[in-house]
Length: 483
Image (cartoon, rainbow, N blue to C red; front, side):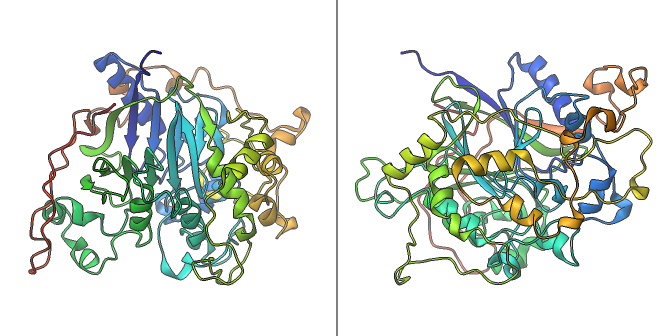
């Protein structure tokens, strides 16, 4: 049997809707390096805006409203040249993403991970957690949908405890005794709180001195995801949000039955795509099979089924089951029988169907950001199909049923005779293909890192005046290639 090939993967921090520029940059890198990218991973603030109405669902001042370029890929005017996976951040087309809580295609060849998810590509397990941490909303149920009530457009992108719980159940107490990499790659928007202890925190503070107090108080990032990192031990963990590049190497304790020391987790946070900022990293990872397609993860499917009773529409606090919970299951790591049941529900075919459909009308030339009504909420056929097949509640349907009078008819269901015409602008100057360097705003825009990123051990002293405990010496590592 031949050795699986190395995958060429690009990772970006915050995208901020700059898809033309990002894909153009990848195209230039492919020409320079002589290879094709297999996958693009985006760590949030993706801004999947379909039309000007979606701008009213994005949490930012109106003076910053800008449709950017994702809408071209949504409408089919363009197609993503690289298979793209993204998670949500805190500046998103929130109404659209709320149609796909379990994930789905946001456009052809562009896949959204949902609130939390695990999928596979070429045998690699890729996990994702959308949003940022806010303690006041962490224990709440889901309730946000367009039209957003006061404050709901903000709480809509706050991480919920049920999503972290589901990801933690990728391992169990019995498997944690041995060295287990539950994930190959993990994506989150904000950083795991405490990860700064494992990198050059003084260099970080030289760039961002106002991080000092939050780091000292363990408030920089999500306080619940560092335990998730230790539980799942991904080879890579990528984040964004704080608009700077920061690398760390997190070591793991040797398990009772481990023969060798476990591999560390290579953490890397990246910047946003503006001039001379380090927002993109290329990596190479050995594939585990030759199926270069997105697939559902059978263990994750079983976890979703095991935790279906925890999916609730509620503004109140929702306590999660834990050790000592009387008469209630608290460990949702699936048995082999439960995994097989999930597989059978999908007919042993885990390929994610290419079933993207437009729910909102695409942007029309001439629409202005400030004079278009907010987009209504839609029942997304992808969510309906997935939840029906797995036999779980559809959060999209639960939210849809909350306000029947505020829902829209999906664009894909409108008869052709009633469809909104999309003007033909083939002769427009912007449709003329030009090299990426000639695209407006792209020339000299990015600082791209295709070289190995060093993960040096952190200094003995941290950010406080008190010396930290000595850590084991870590050799400088490379993020470039893993076999």
